[in-house]
Amino acid sequence: MQALSRVSLAVAAGEIHALVGENGAGESTLTKIIAGVYQPDEGQIEFGAEIVHWASPGVAKRHDIHVIYQELVLFPNLSVAENIFLGHERSGGLGMVDHRRTVEDAREVLRRLGAALDPRRRVGDLTVADQQMVAIAKALVHNVKLLILAEPTAVISGREVTLLSERLHALQRDGVATIYILHLLAPAGGDFFYLRQRQRAE
Image (cartoon, rainbow, N blue to C red; front, side, top):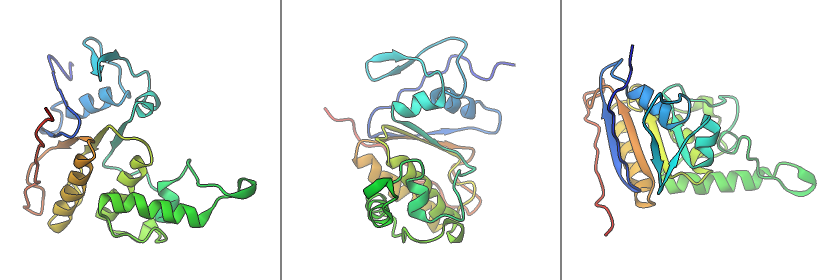
């Protein structure tokens, strides 16, 4: 069974797009191709001015493409700061982890998102919406050019949906391109996900 056929998608820096479709429509497959999880049978991916081939998700990440899946990959017993910099720990003298610097750097990344979270809080004590902010902040440790969110409103509603949208528009001003994978524009809470696209720079 063919999941995708004759699909064309163009996303420029600072643009926000939504891919909306019911389960099985192929949006998740397209996401995984962009992220290097699946290899396309035909067609090509152009990134910048080059035709590229992502052999793995790691290669895509090294080219600043990051995906945040619905099932968040976070460690609930660690703090917000520890989760954000896991694998990229801030070190001090003698190679020891510099906890103060880790907290300060995490606070700066969260400030960029407009998320008023205490970096010292345990992730397991946060709401799902705040955990999403931690996952996005974790991606921002790297130089993100394309951020893909898979069904971000499936587990949040109401004000949380609005906050997520507002915080990601802050990234738009930094030139980060965003793709939302959605099954419905109106999630369970009945609030429509607000999408806005910035005009391309001349």
